Image (cartoon, rainbow, N blue to C red; front, side):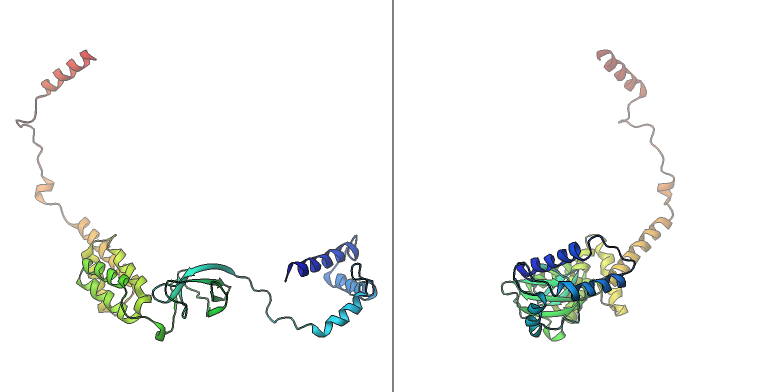
Length: 275
């Protein structure tokens, strides 16, 4: 709707409120609608339009053949923002990934976020590139298998080197995840590597080994296993009995480096006098 049409519609609403409804009260909406229908037929449609100088009903009859049916769906609202196409050929919206091809990697696209769908459009022409159903759960990947990219990028090699620093099992699990999911699975790899910054490497490495034994190749599973191993290690440490040396450690009372209390008292007295 352009600015002229918008003003025309708003003016018609104001005209109805100040003419037909002014000073009137109705008990039900049905009673009001009946009154407005009568007012429309007997007065509004037959009046002469102020600016056009023509009867309103006559102008409507001219426009009527050109009117189209209203859409089945009501007005759909959306938010709009720019997104970068990542090296896995996807854009990120609310922590989920959506295929953006044929938009090139590294380019900016326009993303319209509706209640139940996502539209990816060209940034300049606004032409539609892809449409996807909107994911209901964060972390969802909407990307056909034939569009997945499996050749490692520089980012992939960097993550794998980070995993190798944690341990052989962590490196192996990350390699398997990349072989299964391709570049779009690199977020899981980042998650596993990130565990090494919060927990001991040997425990993260052991958790990766257990995950592969369980056949569950996911970051959440590795994190849960790591936290369990950390809890078990802390419990074992707390339950370990104190050693004899720790339990019966004697305090040294005499040593050539330990001065007598009289020397400390004399030093304190002299310092107090100078003050």
